[in-house]
Length: 289
Image (cartoon, rainbow, N blue to C red):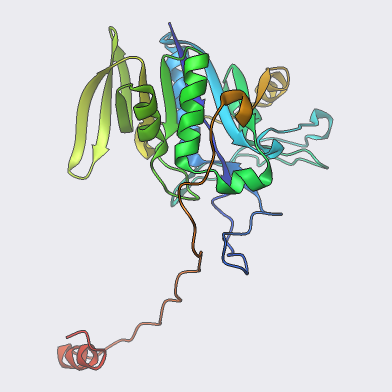
């Protein structure tokens, strides 16, 4: 049976209003609520389902970032538990939102472990290094870990909701020289091949690829489960291996320079016009026609 590697990213929570830094070098992340990237939640769920169907033997979650990528749960201080799942613009009702007191935080790797992942790998980087990490670096990290762990399948979210790059799966497959099934909305294993239903502009496309392979999860692949309190307790005992960039031999020299980050222009108020003639006049005044 297969070993599945799942990439999970810690991003600013979907419900937080993004603020640009005064120097326009990025967005404000300090003191802002973070959560697991919603598409990565879908990837984790799919990996767990593969294990439940006896397709996979082990599921390993990988996250890169500062120590906040882990979580330090104090179960004595948990007043209740639940999780909100964001699917882009589709918000689901809260099911008993977590009330975590003191320093305890519900964060990326332990969230994945509480959902059912067997163990985690945390690639520790400093805050300054994390700011300059780009999809090509993450792809190299995932490819190296996939080789070291002898993974048969790598599943990641199709994109992160912070940078919307949509590059990691494709480049990881290229570094590994593995087949890829991107934008997956359905995944089945038939014999020694994976049948992947992909969401494309014209509808759906079904392909077959051999394993080992790289998959990127689209929105309709599944609906992630809610971790239960017993599973949260079990997650505390599951191992998390720590690695550094030097352990992996990955060069993280930036390939892209961010020149400026700015808020989108404020949308102007609309005007109600009485008829088509007024519309034509307004369009001419605005230089549109």
